[in-house]
Length: 143
Image 1 (tube, rainbow, N blue to C red):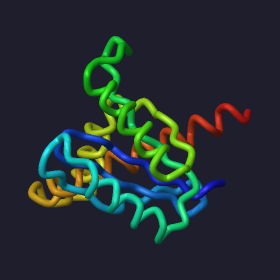
Image 2 (image 1 turned 180 degrees about the vertical axis):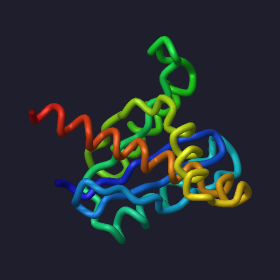
Image 3 (image 1 turned 30 degrees about the horizontal axis):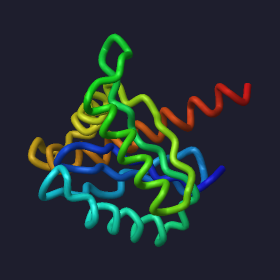
């Protein structure tokens, strides 16, 4: 399996998670953005992290509405994915991220993580959920 980095792209943060070439995912960090339009520093940090981990592919969360339609956030996520692909030259795939943040909060709560720590880490944990969902969907495709 490729070394993959998943990104939970938001207006103020980007959650980052990776795998180690296996089916396990790990929350890595949350990149804070000063302005929604300011992507240079965010992309630079993603490139640093992906280079350190020999990433071969990116997965970007696709925020669908509950009726599975795409809205403004989905459009922005797709634009970000296209920019990332152009800049890095690596494959970028989209993965439905519906309820990934809810799942991330539930996991952290079950682990008895303090509330203030959950707020700091939720985006990277959501990225880990996105990555796990992508890995699981690939397994289903291979069956």
